[in-house]
Amino acid sequence: MAILGEHKGAVEHPRRVAVIGAGYVGIPTALLLSHFGHQVVLAERDDYRRTTMQDGRSPIIEEDLEELLRSVLETQRLRIIGDAAEAVVNAEFVFLCVNTPMGIDGHADLSFIDAACAQIKDHLMPGAVVINKSTVPVGTTIRVAAAIGRSDVAVVSNPEFLREGTAVRDSFGPDRTVVGGDDQEVAATVGGLFALTGAPLVVTDAATAELIKYAANTFLTTKLSFINAMSQLCDALGANAVDLVRGIGHDPRIGFSFLNPGPGWGGPCLPKDSHALVAIAETVGEQIPLISAAIETNHRQQRHIVQRVRELAGGSLEGARIAVLGLTFKANTGDRRDSPALVITKLLREAGAEIAAYDPTVPVDATDDDVQGLNLCASVLDAARDARVLLILTEWNEFRELDFDVLGGVMEQRTVFDGRNILDLDIARSADFVAWGIGRS
Ligand code: UGA
Image (cartoon, protein in one colour):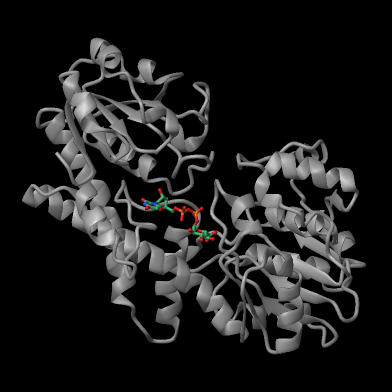
């Protein structure tokens, strides 16, 4: 884990920190700060998550996380407990890292934030700083300060930019640290907790820090929807989207990052935050048609892929068996929240297709609601058996080098649609497959 570098326990003035919520943001935050040398208490009320971590195992699929957890537990600088109130009693800094799911009308649901404030407010030390790391609408720092109702406690916003799948790497090597609050000195002190990352510190007011989080995520969705729209145009014009990306990405003003067309953007953050930003704008009488168009383009991309698969299946999906490879919203995570793969399989089923799905993180006996009605398989080969079309929807490494001779031997017909542009289509074609990708046929 080279990324951890030489910073282990290196901080000069260790601080006492509490982190509320052991999720995708709370766990890396707690581990990073205790790795740097701070004393951290992590509060998680879910028994499974808590006991798993106490045993030195990670409750989420995340590269390097377990190794980091074990090394931090050995230092005795991390305590994992159930009660948020107990976690904050001696803490100088309290990070709120609870879930803010999408509520009604696209607004973020702040009930977990409210509940955390109610739990901790009477137990905070005088002079403590509460730091909001959950993704929350503009104005929430003020709301949290009001909910805590203590003039001797400061509240700041510190948005998180890590990605699932690379959470540890992103936490140790962020592009920037953003902290916003009324008191710029307090904000700078909070920024100092992350100084060992070496990232530039951007200190702002609270509203700007909160908006930065939404601006960053919706910029990314806009960029992705742009390239997805271009890939649709490539299909219509007979152009090649992979070459198009090469042709524009070398321009440093555009860049290659986040420019791979695919089955649409998903996951627990980008869809939720795009809807939330539209809703936030509406509350102040503003509209951002650009973001609404990015959301609509995302839906179009998924319908477009279904149409392409229909063509490959021979014009109708009625009764066609489709082998779907990948169900998570991207590779290297077990997360299927708002996964484009699940949206597409739903549309395929509505059109009469039968789905045989394989994902390395989904066991064949999974009973979760979101995989109901799918025929879950234990391997690519099992999924491909009698399938009319092989459809890649998540870019897992094991799908990059498929044995098309073997797969062709068990499929009803030799057709593949690469929804992530990870295949060399010529290899599939040399095994007599009709092979299409996103924006290339
Ligand atoms: C996203 C942001 O990238 C993080 O900076 C942010 O901190 C996080 O949301 C959050 O708000 O918590 P994440 O949801 O982990 O991170 O996923 P991304 O890596 O951003 O991917 C989002 C979606 O875009 C996935 O469905 C992915 O497959 C898709 N994508 C990404 C593409 O289709 N093409 C690309 O080139 C990149």
